Image (cartoon, rainbow, N blue to C red):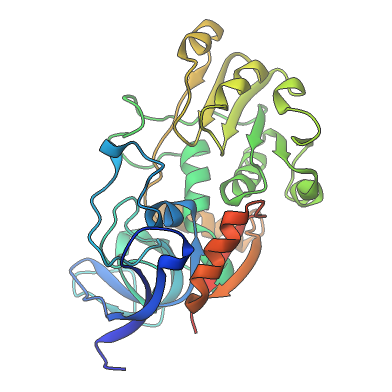
Length: 336
């Protein structure tokens, strides 16, 4: 292979998993402020298959312009191969992980042997975890962090006029819907770390897993709707969101908060009547926050669980696995 080429997964059209094409692609060029990373593992996230599908889940006016062919993905773990002259804090040989350029599309991205990443998006990988587990952290971990702990940026919020503000968790009761998923399993652990009483909602197959992570109570949504079981909750983080998220208003005490992760909430009058704060935010790349998460991973306060791994060349199979649902935490691609 020529030295200016690499292997990558690219989209030449939008569609199902079959449009993911493993092929040669140009090696990314290093720009000021960037670090070239030899990728060892890639974390898979819902925006990857949203992009693959042409972002049909978004209103037309929200769909970003994407030039094809495009490499999908944002989450990487790997080893620094080169550093731009103006970058400080990283050196060749450093093991790093990060969420690259999210929420933008179209530049150097994750499903590839190499990625050129803004240094500000990266953190040093914890020595206590391997690249596969590190690649499973960035988007899911940062989403949980920015919803629950600290927003960490001043960018305009595309999902609402106001800035999202996390609420104090110590001594509070927090219900997490979709607790076994990528964001959910981090949210359980971060809420426990901050002193919350955590109610985890998932299918019964995930109960032991979530109790191991620290869940105090468990609701099997297949047996009974959580809104019929939980009461006097201070905060609901609904990692599924969508049009059904309003049902969780019934679980909240007056003055509580509902944080849906996806569009669709349609009960503002009821929320106002109950004095409930409803708030959303868009996760953004943040190297310093990842470094804080890395410290929690290092001491075992937080861990990342892996559902399954696939070779980069088998990205199609990974997306097919994602489409079947009921994923316990994270899917990861490994780069040979």
